[in-house]
Image (cartoon, rainbow, N blue to C red; front, side, top):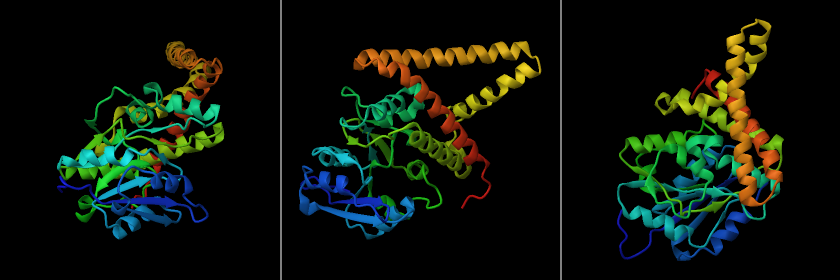
Length: 314
């Protein structure tokens, strides 16, 4: 695909629930710094986001398919920056971080700090982190999230679509299949969207449990996608369960080992909370961030175990 003298046509696909209007996404697309005669917007309503996106892809006329969520706010230069990376014909997918909106709540910002921490989400932290000095690079599926992803239409024309039985993590499974066709995925730190975070512990725990569930399901479908970091939150849960058992069975070595591991974990969580509180000049962060880390890892770990345990994979 070459477009030296003109910009590519872009099809935005926005999935949303039947009772939702994607006003935030639509309003930001209206002011994007890009020729509007080279943009189309496809809204697909329903309750299965992978299926909704697949329906939109089949309708799309653009050379580039842009995926954003209904509550994403994209900035005016987003599309120009993103489409520029496709000048390299080996590039099939481009994505970047999704950041916490400035006007989001205190708790939501703390969730953003946890998600953007390597301690919190390992390599997936790049999805939530803005580094103004960062450079675009070839990346794995862990660095890209579907609320900020663009893909060449020709990739779908090769017969690749999202797995409609997998949600979430459908983009991760899809990216690995695209890589196997020889296309590169690019993580572009200057291709930003703003995406609201969860407002309370209950919503955050449910979201992270779903993320862990999706990862577990993906590994059942795609065993080569497994990495040791994926199982660490589940091991954390097993360690929590093992601690009282080790006391009951009077296993002093195991007691001491588990207590030491939890002590190290808490030291790291408290240290990150304190450092973040100093940087952001808000002492409240030091108290809440360690608890957010615990909820993050326990919820993700439980979801992962559930996803791995499911036998029926379509």
